[in-house]
Image (cartoon, rainbow, N blue to C red; front, side, top):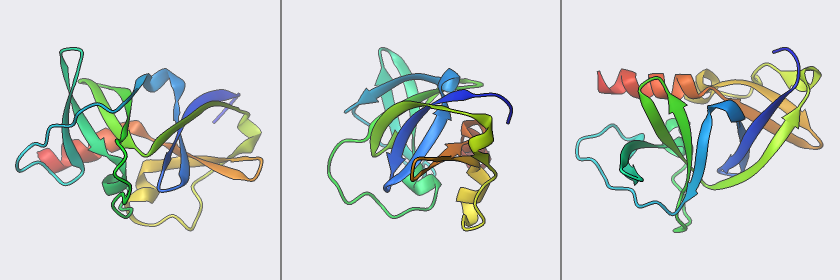
Length: 147
């Protein structure tokens, strides 16, 4: 990674994640998710975003993390994909964070399983680790399950 950048941050299971702000269309709270019968487990359902039907991907399931114990509504990170948009369901939204290239690290060796495939790096920030999610690989993982 070269130069500095900005990431829209969010939390899943108390982990801090980030997505390049250029890939984020918007953040929506409390959208109703309609389940889809026979969909892969990572697909929580569909949301209606002002007339556009968007697939809602549960990042906890996608990253093989425990189910969410809190009954609070998910936050939808609406991100651009090749075929339109998808919603990444997260626990809560964070801030837009600015980072410098010299803070970038490749994925930590402690990451295992699907998480290692979907996270392409991390930034060390004042006592926190910002895990950078590769949204293209998340969508590709979904495509691989459907085909």
